[in-house]
Each structure stands twice: as C-alpha cells, then as structure tokens.
Image (tube, rainbow over all chains, first blue to last red; front, top):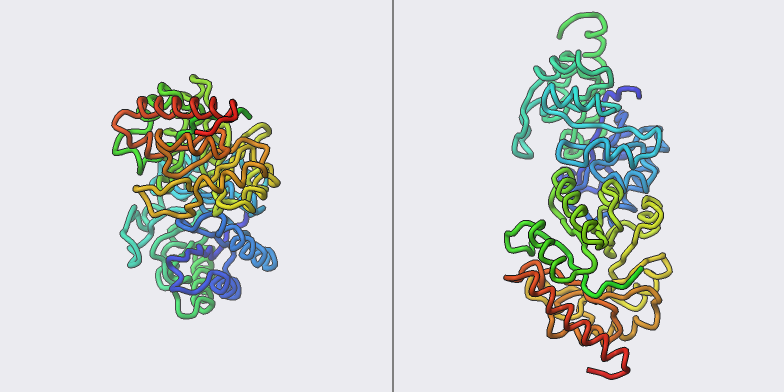
Length: 216
Length: 216
C-alpha cells in the first residue's frame, strides 16, 4: 500500500461534540490520505449506519477507510481495512476473517512489537506515542527515538502516532516515519481542514528534506 | 437447533468476582444446555484466550457456546454461534460473516421484533425482560405476557430472559418459552451448580405440565 502522509483517526470522544461526518469532510478537504474510525463505546448497531456514511464519503474521495478493532464491522461494511492495537484480536485471527486485499494495520510500542507486526503480515505499522498528549493519560511514550530504531526493521509503511502536531510532525518524518496519524489535532481543531492542511505541508517539507538527505 | 432448557449467560460483571471458568464448570455440572459469553468492556485480545478456554470446556460437555455481540470473536474462535441485541450489528450483516451452521440468536422486546428476528433467520429468539431485576436498571419489562403473544409468531426455540428465578421459571415456560436464559441467578449464586439444578428441575416440571395441557 501507499504510505499515507496524513492519517486521521475519527474518534467521537475527541471531536468536541461535532459529528464525525463533518470532521471527515473537513479532514478530506484538508488532505487526509487515510481515515480510521475508532469508536470504543457505541453499540455496533448504531455505529453501522454511521460507518456506512463515512465509508461512502471516503470512497468518493478515493481515500482508504479503516475500522479500529471491530473486524466484523469492517468486513460487513466492506471497509478497506482493520486497525488493531496490542489488546485487540490476534492479527492472525483478524486476518482469517478479512477479505483478500483488506489492509491490516497494527499499533506497536517497541521494536519487538514492530518486528512481530511485520511478521504477522501487517500492511502498515503504527508506532507511538511520539509525544505526550493532553487529552488522555500517556501510555507508551516512546518518542521519535523508537521510530528511528523501528524503521530498519519494517519494510511496510511506518506511521507515527500520539501527540503529533504540525510543529513536531517533521521530527517524526525525519525519524523514519512515512506519515503521521492524528486524532485530536484534527478532530478537536477549531478548523479541522486547516489543521489537516498544516500537517500535510509540514510532512511534505520534512519528506523533501529527508529525500535530499538533509536533517531538519 | 434443540431448544435449551437452561441457557446461562456468563458475564463477569455479574459473577461476584469469581472467574468465569469456575462459574462455567458449575453451570455445566448443574445442567446448563447452552452457554453465552457476554463481555462488554474487556478488550478482545484479553477476551480471546478466555473465550478459547470456555469454548473448550463447552465442547467437552457437548454444550453450544455462543458469543454475544462480537461476530469477529465468535468466528475466529470457531464458536457455535452469535447472540445479538437490537443495538448490535444487523442480523444480515452478522450472518454474512458467520460460517455455515453457526447459530444466530436475537434478543427481542416486542412482537414486531420477534417476528422480524425470525424473518431475519434467527435460530432462536430471546424475549424479555420477563421480570424486574435487581442488578441493573429495568429495560423492556415485557413480562411473560409478551412470551405468550410471541409464541405463535415464531417456530424457532423461544427463550425467556430477565429476572428469571427457579421460582418463577415455570411461569415463563407456561407462557410459551422453551427455556430460560439467566445471568446473575447462576453467575452470582453462592452455589452456581445448585442454582442451575434448581432451574432445570423447575423447567422440567413446567414442561411436563405444559405437555399435559395443564397450567401451573
């Protein structure tokens, strides 16, 4: 798969009371290249029609739509993939349920987890948290240093996550990530489209520097 | 499928701090004929090995093991079926993910829902709540009266649920249910095996009366 520059995770608890349809439209307008729906509390019956709407909007934009945790929802929807954390279903179990061609993304917090994720057939690997976040208790604060150590271990796209802002995104790219995943930085932004645009600009700049072999 | 007399729903929040392996062993010893795992908060990665153990124990006892809500977990485990509430995935979506032969059970709270459940291909229909419960806020208190109205509408096994005790189980069977589903009445009982036995005895007595055309 192509590495997304900006991967926006839609999470209602981080969306400042706005509906996810609205946030998604703004994120896509701002240049998000992959979308994930993460919803931990909503019953799947309520989630299903919401996810169908979000998927349709992503399809229209030509952007992959990934479902967090719920493999059943992802497959039933015809979503583009599934994202699993370390506490979710084992990757092999998830893969056995997924349709051919669906993307499997895995969250990792150590070199061992990242190597295991690739061995388990992950299509992309997320690594984090990159920076402290204000919105929830910090777990697994590994920093860009871990991205630097993980980069040589994985051939698939590597995405940094956790506390990333347009200001520090370049550091994450410089450390070896192909792109960044964000939640509140877009979902909770006063202007999510503008926030997404700032990320894309920062990432493009950092990718250019990296391709020229220059550091920030 | 054969209608279970006693269907025990394993729920950690109702298990008085004991582990579900222990409750399950007791429920099976006491005569439970179907088991459901209902776990709303545990991450599926933690749930997976627990569910594997419970499934193995049910297999050894020749008793079907059903997973609540999580179709992905059920299929990945090779469980015998899935139970869905009205707020869970649409039955058709769930069925599309299930292996042939897997049981689909649906919770219903009205005649319309029960008829729709059968039309959607439910292998059994649960109806409730039969009686007020002390353990959680009462929702959909429909009573045995609804079981009586639903009975002519469904050909598949009908199971009453909600607040059923060995003392009132007979009333549920008399109203038209083939069996009863219980949670706290077994999971939270001081002696879950003895509680299960009392249910089975009460249900057998009520079934006998019913087959003889006598009321309680």
